[in-house]
Image 1 (cartoon, helix red, strand yellow):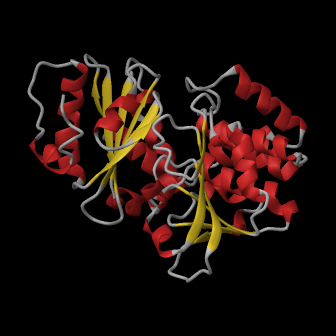
Image 2 (cartoon, rainbow, N blue to C red):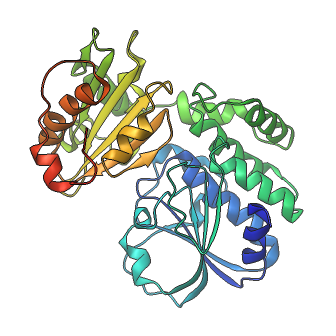
Length: 342
């Protein structure tokens, strides 16, 4: 059976399902959860959407957003099916999943680095987004695409293609987007919520990040650091600042941008790589224990942010052959002995 057929076979008979996505969810992750909820509503199944991380505030406009619950330690009865959306590894769902008894794990994703952790896996790296796959699922299930479902699916495609600007933007996703507009998605309204409506604090944070940006024009490399202190000073949660990840790459002449983001818990740093597909940043991320796409990838390091910058930036120079200087690898090798062989 094809991936969509196997997935539908696992979902259609389930009476209770747990739906979740990766830590620090993005637009495709959040909208995919809601899209699946809309698809399965007609089946009469009891659906619980539970995440370990809050969703970014700009996505509050999505239909059904109130259905997403933040895990707070509550106990749940066993779920016959767990659906993981847009998540390359099971541990990226968060440790809360280990506290809930689940049966069959259904894994739906478009990341080439997905490690096929599900009992049922549907992984399509040719898809621009998980939202694209859920549109195919809706069609396979014979579910009509109403305005609410269309809005969620369109948002997933829009955000994971970077407003139709990333290298994963394809004729296929444009055809899907056109159809979803015909089904009731409002592109102007969705774009306003996501790209043309920012708080003063968010704009101040963006300005500070740009001011503190490090640019090496000769090496076509730029990087920046986003700390909790910066977010607190601007009155912006670090979750709502995730879209600033593209700023380093936006510099003219830069083909690789890196954002180092401090976690709420000390001793951890999120490293996000962005490119136009060359260099393939998924290779860099995988070598550091992460994953992603050729143009957008990342990893989490058990390091303070300053230490991560001091170690990763020289390593990137060395890995890409852009500077003849020895990288500082000792600390990273200690934590990732298999992932940092140049």
